Image (cartoon, rainbow over all chains, first blue to last red; front, side, top):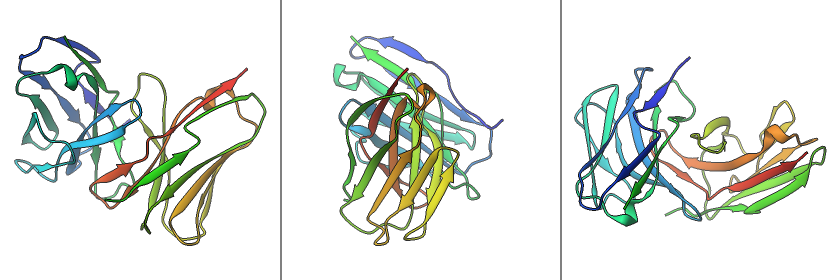
Length: 112
Length: 109
């Protein structure tokens, strides 16, 4: 069964901390994505990557960075966490032969 | 930026009833996907529609793509509690998808 695995289901971090959210896929997909999901706002794209060491800004990249050193792993980094980054974070991947995204189960991050 | 509106935002119905939810875009799109998200989980792809007027069926779920390729609907027949969830439509190409805000469906046993 193909999978996108996010390292943590729940995280609580303090304001100002550097936060790493990890995502791994086992489908050899080229494309990977990070979204955040907030009530009333839907899913908003933060960053995406077409290939190893490549990254593109999405609609709301401010306050975030990403890393893709290996094809299967795409990390989202909050350089200095703030309370307005409290959200559900969803990682997804998409391969050339797919017709849709495969999502991970999400990481619910609370910044206090 | 394409706007993608879903309606209704919330829907609560009794088990066994039928329902339809809608997805409308401000512009023509090449393909559209429907996802279902259960509480505490990521969205799961239900279907992709690519041709204007296309109808796809997935058991009790019927998906329709408008002739003008600006709208889509999802009809559920004889709803069951297992249909409860957030239904999201999404449009775009192979890379970036734009998601609607979703319809939160609750089926009451």
